[in-house]
Image 1 (cartoon, rainbow, N blue to C red):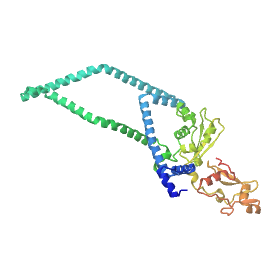
Image 2 (image 1 turned 180 degrees about the horizontal axis):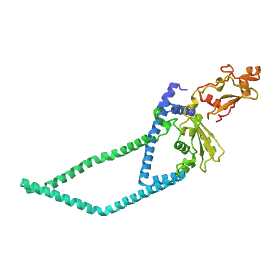
Image 3 (image 1 turned 60 degrees about the vertical axis):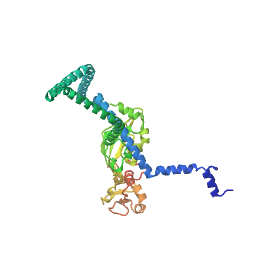
Length: 398
């Protein structure tokens, strides 16, 4: 038998195969590497700048296409038609007609410019050569030297040669630098347009928890990863605005109904609640999805950013000493739900929380500051959610 030292020597010489590392250890090492904060920071950096370049190229392509085609006017016409603004439709149709006429005129001028080019070059060269010859005659007469007649022409020829030499020297470096300049320009456009995902941005640049607007809701649905949604939104004349009902205030958040296009089910939206919340700039517990009576529609309640993590207000039980309720059949005020509506708690639920006092008297006076007054803990989303459902164990009602 060989000792451990001899085995290591044989392994280093290649005469004995090194023992394979267990697969579980390799996977554990990979998990630790991926979970390391430095790895995540590097990954966010790569994704962020890659998104700047890709998003900047997309923005520039969109601007170029809108500038050289009538796509912008067609888009505005469809949006005006969807909103029923026929005066706006006529206005954008007239602007589109003027744009097409001007574009046709420019194209025809470019075609005829090729025919007029030789004449234009000749009409520029002949007067220029005559001016140089006249300058040479004047110079020869002043210097009493016939050779000075061609001196201005030689100066111009030397200047052209110098420009050609400079261009030849700078040509290769320019070809090398131009792609990097273009890449930097595209990156700058993407960075200015904030095309990187929110999770890849530095903490001080993230726009989490902004106000909910129709465009934010449409983009959040478009980026859910459901293939039918982006195509349906692109085909809509108003870029998805017709999907949304008016956004209304509802307690510490907003509420909006979204009518889904054909091919998208409500189950698919509910199963992607976390991704939808992240697309809206919210945490998962700040977005609730329900199914209203309307077909193929989901109702979103979106809390204000951080509203569910703030301390809740005092219960109505500590604000009015005269409130009474029967603990078996009555109900007592408890607090507010997420929509800002008052909620009540059953006397039986309260009696289970405070059985001693419930046994002592049937008609329970709710005394301000009483030790048996039910109180809610504050400072967490759970406390706010528990206030919405009273004794229920399910998700908050709103």
